[in-house]
Length: 116
Image 1 (cartoon, rainbow, N blue to C red):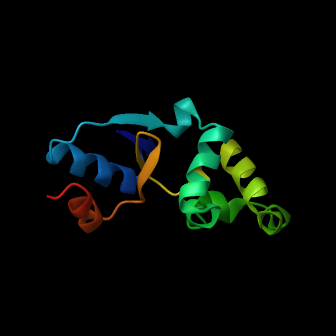
Image 2 (image 1 turned 180 degrees about the horizontal axis):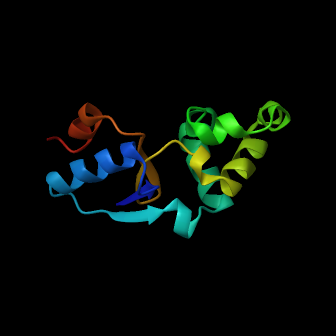
Image 3 (image 1 turned 180 degrees about the vertical axis):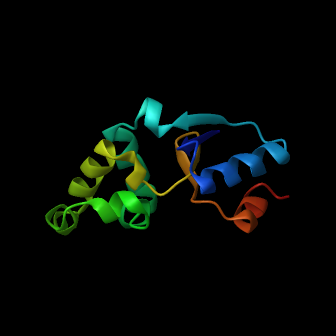
């Protein structure tokens, strides 16, 4: 199982703490250090949709120029933007065997997912 995110993100911290407190092993993939590939983003987009994958809350989206935001209206443009700016990816992404198990963190959803 792999958890993708940014270490200093509060939501990622909550997900990591929950997994660790419940004895669930995972590998952490740091977007800042390791980036994210176009292929990975396409795979996630097919499973969740690019609209759900795009994180419009937060400073990274807010600081984008209006013309960049306006152009982010389709899968290819959004995925290219996410590849350049991983902070625009809703996080964490929890994946196992190439399948997205969860996008974001919700304790109830994790409990259901792991039957805790």
